[in-house]
Length: 75
Image 1 (cartoon, rainbow, N blue to C red):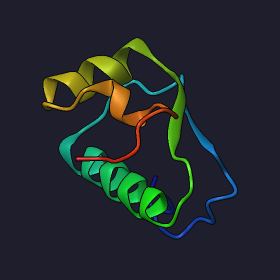
Image 2 (tube, helix red, strand yellow):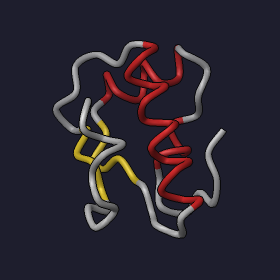
Image 3 (tube, rainbow, N blue to C red):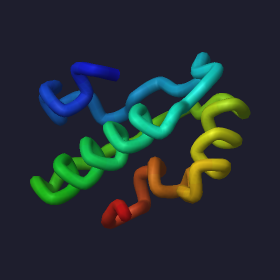
Image 4 (cartoon, helix red, strand yellow):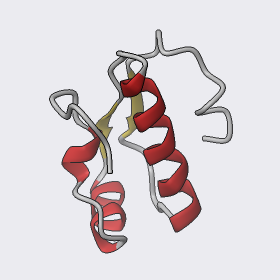
């Protein structure tokens, strides 16, 4: 995750299927990367998403749909 903002947008999906915990800082990083890539016209998705990923993201106040392809912008 620490390389998320530095990676090239050719990677269209971040695998979140094995994620067991998402904390506030990790979520901030994902939201910032999604916003940056989308502002540059690239897609940013997290697929697949583990139940822990979706639960933690929701607990932190973000709809997991923010990390699906069809989202045009991020919060």
